[in-house]
Image (cartoon, rainbow, N blue to C red; front, side):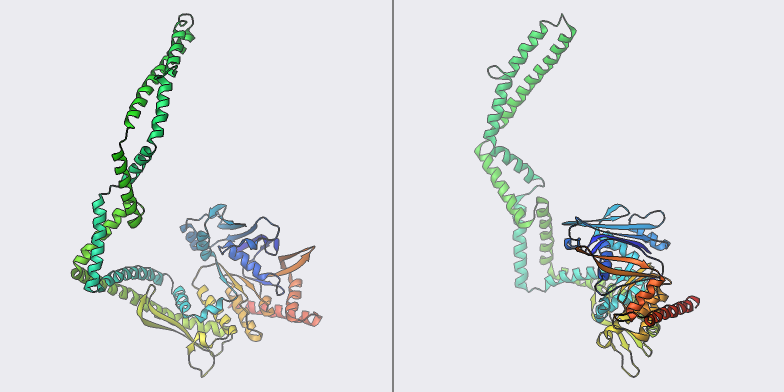
Length: 564
């Protein structure tokens, strides 16, 4: 579960920290108080795109920190499987610091990538945004929901489908090369042979270009090299008043006194070694100068060879290695084109085999989807009935498409009838905004029975509902909070009354700045908050009485499903 949220210097939040409870945590406040900033800060910590404009005006950075406490051993093992740090007591601390031009993510104090944070978040929390229920209008999302419900067995099959589909697509593309007419094939073969021969005639050797570059650089600067080496040669032993002469005189002077002092003898011996080194150096530099005698023909040949190699690298690859790899590809292509009919037949055989394997795996996946679709449909009818869809019919159609995609050949569509006598129609064509939000809550509730994600966040799941339906949504959230920690932003008093913990988000002016804060409120304040939701500008004792009655009703409802 999410233990705490700490936010500093983010938008209107100067600094705030809030501790969350188990069960249903309700967040409420006036419109514009900053509820979206709060959800946005959690999203930021979990890897959402960060913008420097999010940093509070005048601050150098923004900071968001989430602390999770895990108790489910399977979730802990899944985190460890990602090779991410976790404290011994199951605590995970996710921190994100946003600065102009960069942001830094950490997990339990260790630097982490955004990709790692997102992978971790999928195990810890499920966030339902304000407009996420609109995704139900798109049929492609119906397949994803069904597959999430189906679980691990289907997930393994989908990996197999993806791998076989990649092989199938590659073979199919390769086969398309042989659908050219004879004239086009002849042109392809002629070009491939030309390019192959051009590379072959060059006789390239790996590493040759580096050696030639070094030689060319040496020859291009040979005059300067020779002049500098000649001066060094003269100064060290082959000119007037050279270093060798000076060292020789110094050796003789020290030898003259070596019998008077042992230290003088040691110094003379050391200087003798230096004199020998200078003699050796002088011979080596003489040999070096003799090797520097390049003729013009050698220079021209080196330059031409380099130009040829660089031209081939420019045409066929950035290095000699890549050029030689491309040559091998050309060789394979030439062989295919020269034996086009036989190779085409071979490809067609491979393609048929892979297609048969792909269809077999797709059929297995389809069988699972159809079986799970019936279970999900039945569970959805129960969940929707609980949410005040009294005569609802819900069906998941799984149809086979002609074209096979990377997730199989199934086309999945949610069908619904919300009124008696109405035919089943596509969900996207009949559901209103309020109905979509309840349907999404039903989906989340059903999926939650199969997943192990400990924390769920609902941002205004109450869109477009009121009255009895609001109570039904409230009860569903209350029931869901028995197995999951729920954070819910709401404007409805019926939902707020069901809370295990209530939090008020408020915006206020402090001096010349506006600040958003969040704090848990006690029962007397909860009554005032519910009265605010119920009443108008003036909150009367009657409205407060209604708020108290809502809380009592919610407590009674919680007792019922806790004892059931």
